[in-house]
Image (cartoon, rainbow, N blue to C red):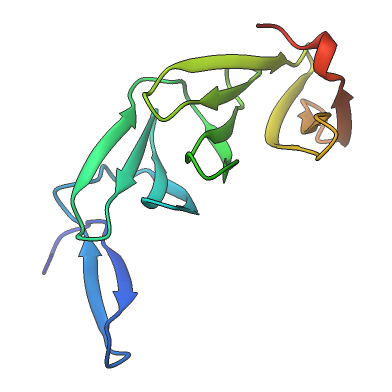
Amino acid sequence: CPGQRCTLLRRAARDASPEVFAGPAAFSTRVQYLAAGRDGVYVVDGEDILRIAPDGQVAKRVAGLGAQLMGLRVLDADDTLLVAGHADRAVYRVARDGSVEVLARSAPPWAPSAALIARDGTLHVLEWSSQNVARVRHVERAARSR
C-alpha cells in the first residue's frame, strides 16, 4: 500500500521471511484482536469478526455484531468464539455457523472488555466502569441469559 494507509496481516514464510497473509482489501482500518483457531485465524474488524483461512482467504464469521468488540477468544475445537461487546455491555458466544448467543450483560456503569469460561462452566467477565475502575465478575452457568 505505498503512499496510503492500509491493514496487512503478515506471517513468517517457510524461510522465516515475512509474507502477506491477508490484506489490504480484506480489512477496514479498525482491525483489532487476533485469535488462532483450528481452521484459521480470527480477527475483530470493526463490528465484524473475520476468519482468515490458512490459504489467506478472508470471510466474515459474523457481521454487525456491535461496536467496540474486545477480548476475542477461541473456546473449543469447533472454533466457537467468545467476544466482549463493550459498547453493547454484552458478552457473546459466536458459533461456527455464525449464530450469536448473549452469555451475559453488564449493568451500567460497567462494560465488559474480556471474558473466559472456566472448566467448571463459570463465565468470568473483566469489566471496566465509566470511572475507569476494573473488576472481574463471575457468572454462574445457571444465571446466564439464553
